[in-house]
Length: 424
Image 1 (tube, rainbow, N blue to C red):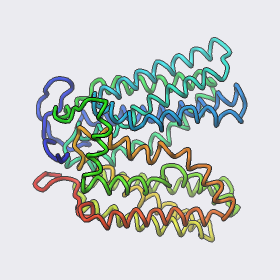
Image 2 (image 1 turned 90 degrees about the vertical axis):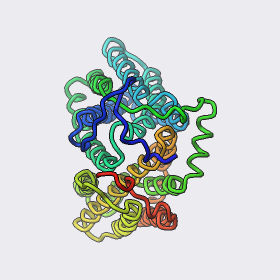
Image 3 (image 1 turned 180 degrees about the vertical axis):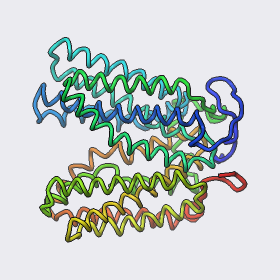
């Protein structure tokens, strides 16, 4: 069943609501969810930096990677199961439970560090719990948009979500730095807990449409059924491959590659900062562009074209002879990869039946954020052995493969963000 049907339903929490149809950027319900999401992502960043700082202070820099891995492993292992849970119980319930757990656990860590002298075990336990909760939260977040707006507004909402992520990435580290400097680890953990509390309070006021009863399958066969649904879908099957390949490098490894590129060319920390900032500005511009557009026709074809442009920019930056050219190419990479990620995300939500969206989001997230820690060592090894140009050329080749998959799949190439007759 196509996810495009029944998107004009009334929004509701657990009871029926009154039908409302308005642009996403003017919908109070959408804005509540977006603000909650921004607070949650910012809380994630503050927590991660507080955890790393505390691990350094308690056990030394060599143990930071161990603590972080204790959170990354359960997140990756349980991600697919998290998609089943999100579809079975609804994204709102899971997101509320996740924020509640994170608020309480991280707040307890803050109090414990303040009152006692804990060992590394406390941080490892907190990281494991956080990783498990993230495995539930990420698929739930991905399943939210079609439950709070119409299909014609999904691209705009994805653009707004992209801007939210950019804002969080700018504010989170700054806030963590200020709090760590003034109040050390307990204050930073407390700030993260407070941000999760803000997200929780807002989510409690977000109204969502329920999944059709026919898609509420028993949990023990939910994952297999979700994978069969995905494999048999003419658009989603190739689209998930495109998302996985296109995000493989840009979910984190490219950021590390830019650091190594600047070091290799002797551009220093300032040069690295300029390139990374240009990449972020380009991504923000892409999100703003998509959010501002009323309608983007032939989204499948546009996303493939953006991937081709991304491949060109990514290959070029590895051979950039000067810092200004590298900054320019970094901005173009952020812009074109941002267009692709926004449009493919909106296409997933448009095409997927809402009852399967949590599981599909889990698959795409596992292929990007979930497996990112495994890719980071490969970046360093590649640059050390063959130089940064080889790494960026490899990323460009992956983008070309993703574009080829998108162009070869006729249904995906012709995919639209909303059905005919739907107002954008």
